[in-house]
Image (tube, rainbow, N blue to C red; front, side):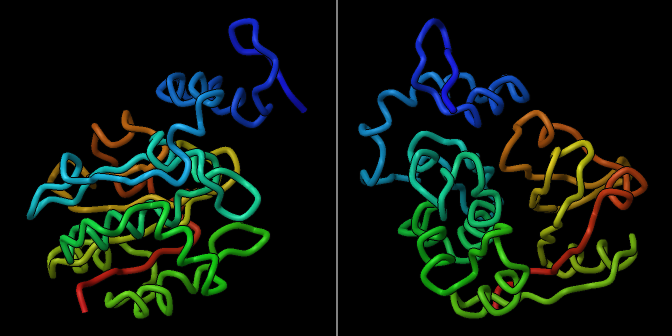
Length: 212
């Protein structure tokens, strides 16, 4: 099904819905007609990664967002590969990795399913790229302990503040005001801190990710 955007009628309904739900994606959606300028092209992340900091990458970045992840665009369904890329870049500094390449890896190794990114991506998939991932039980103390040890947290989220269906986010730290979130779908969510009580009611599962 196609819908009109600014009088044009060849935009997938899923993209129009994305724009309606998240105004940050307006430029990405409106440039869909010019997607061939970006699909499969070389990606330079040198301006997006700073040593010692966890990069914030958006799944709908035009550099990779129009490329496919399964039957959908990374911009619509690539939160998992984008989160893993943020962790991988933080630990390795390897700028040859990007969300498109990570999505290709997830598909080739069977970590992409009809439901989306498999939870085994955060354990077996992490190991295959030189990281260490383990599922942990949900508690504020467990989460803070991982972050205190230099780890990162990936959370599978239920519908709520971050998603209407399902979503992965990355947690990179905390202070007395709450946890620092890297949401690959919404920059605004990454500009503020989130209290444990708010996050915990929406977390379906979570994993600690470390440098191996």
